[in-house]
Image (cartoon, rainbow, N blue to C red; front, side, top):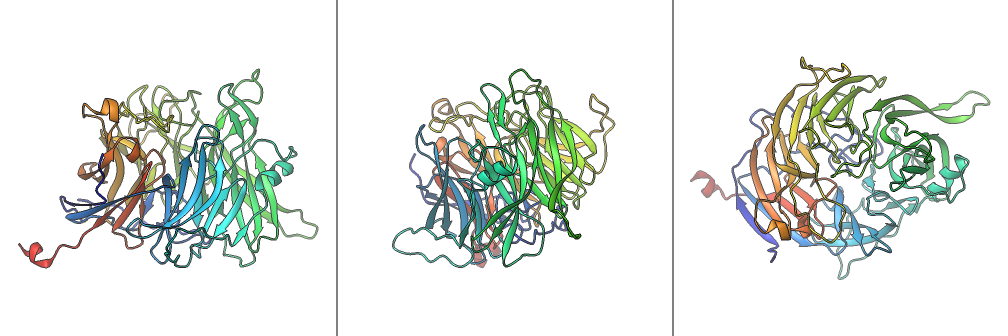
Length: 536
């Protein structure tokens, strides 16, 4: 397929939803992070999958598509100079599947800088997460360490693409956590992601939550190393790294990142077993807090399991998920009072809502057809509303072949403030579903709260050629109020344009969105229409 770098489209102009219920929703900023909507993977540390922008909402749009030699870019942020920052995931071969590079690119998708940050011996994004701190510097994980790269100032373009020198690099956190847990320092483990502890920035050191995935043998369904979460203190000159405290999650493994609130870290784990003769443990959503004993002779920092609540897990690896358990990062919403995930129930996937103060289950709402529901993309959560998508059938197992059969379609909006007359099989209340739609979705969708518009990547397998070439992939704009499609723009056909996981990200101007595909960076932006045409 010949790719035209720039294309222009006239679409139905929809400056905002027919009834925008999110314009006044405010989400607090973690003090250690860049402004919400600019700081990385899930847009804020509540993982709301929403931004305080309107997005590209005009009647004339420009799509830019630029080839990216560093691979797929599922996570992005935006620095104070208006440059985009992205983490790329490059698959090399079966012996060394992936390499991570942090890239800096301009508004027109031209790459300015590329810095290797680590490698992975798996086909997942574990170990590739980053966020932008309150100085807009990129804090990345890679090869067991946390590193800070200088993206806070304008990165100047040159004749060649250059790498950035880290401002600091931590010691190997995997080894330190393993030792704190009494394990061999080389025990298999993964530093999945880190997010800053909610506190005023300290110029001397960074305190950060580090989520350790553990090590899980999917073939034998046995956990080799159990998941854990640690509070780590890193000197900003790189001179020292200390694991202040660690909480082990017995018979659990992890394959999702996490949310951070003022009072702790919230994450999900998948239940397993440490020997093949054991029963499989229940799966949980956790909230872990940290406290410091300042009394004379105090023991320093400790972690406290504020609550952990079991969720339904059928222990099947559903087609479209990489987790034998919940595929979603917890989404905190409703002014911080509630947190939501999808479970791994069968035959119906359920949206589960919990009280953030004590972990009480408040509702379980079945979504999507029986035996055809799975979710590996986090929920949108804003105000008292949730939006969930169906990923069942999404094929992510091959890095070479296109997906030739359609995902099971589905998206739904739920209202958590009221309960329907229906109840789950265990008597738990359900939330009313306000609308459903039947497009096939891939990866995370994002809500622009200023306009009430939802932006999503969708796939269409209706062409006869899709059985060979794969889907036509679109950037799609939907109205959050009624779920209707406002417009969709074609990005391209086949694996080259697949956006299998990660999110959709926005320039700080609010009118440009960016998404990474397997081989491209794609931008959709508003185009000013001359006044004489507007008047006509």
